[in-house]
Length: 344
Image 1 (cartoon, rainbow, N blue to C red):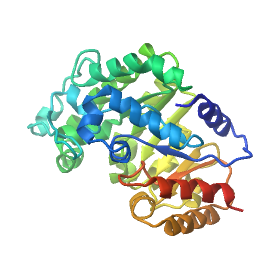
Image 2 (cartoon, one colour):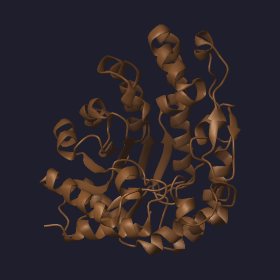
Image 3 (cartoon, rainbow, N blue to C red):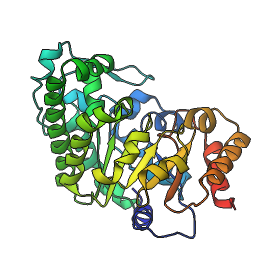
């Protein structure tokens, strides 16, 4: 992440009102390869392409806060790979893990992988280490340890529908699996902290938490997320959930989250009321239908509606309601930035 933007982020998190409204986006493999005019497969297998795509984005949009910044990942395959899932790769489609073949009883016997040796994790650490000096030379550092969240990982290991059923039909076995996955996530984040001392933030991404009602959230989500964030007590506790987020928003402070990226289906005012002051909101223009598929005029109108609805702009980093979508154009992103800057 650009050092200037990291300092800006810390100022926003610490409650400062900035003269210039901050703009930030989560960028990774769904958007960068196509925008950089390379294939998804080349983005994953060629570290130079990965580095150049991220540097390209920084150079074209120098005033945008890119989160987490130079994110080394293999899409949804990253964490499930350590558990031994089959991974499916094609040239220009998103890779995906194939769920493990097991029943509810076997879910509770899940074994914790070694984050130093298993799956794609060593490749991620190697890529980051190889390019650390080049990242620093362009004025950036690795600032976040990143991982998919426990329920997200479980959904790829066991299948979303099957795991949702297991929460109801075999809750003890499901809880055992989530405990093992949480232990794994902590190990994985700790390894990133250990290898890259500039890291001071934690990013978890977990849309599956939005599928649960409040009692199940308190049972299967809250204790695991609290344990992860409290282990690190990061300067920036960042969480992404662009599925239903009204329940999640109520527990952000208790968990230790101070930066929240949420669905465009929820208004900024609604999420602010539930999360309270002190949580920075990253959102929430519709990513696909407006930022990617809309015209520049659509983007401008959408940004104005978003900002007008929010009213008080303190504690907001203007973004879309999710990660940067595939096919979001340079023109539309520039229109977004200009409209935020000129809004009054």
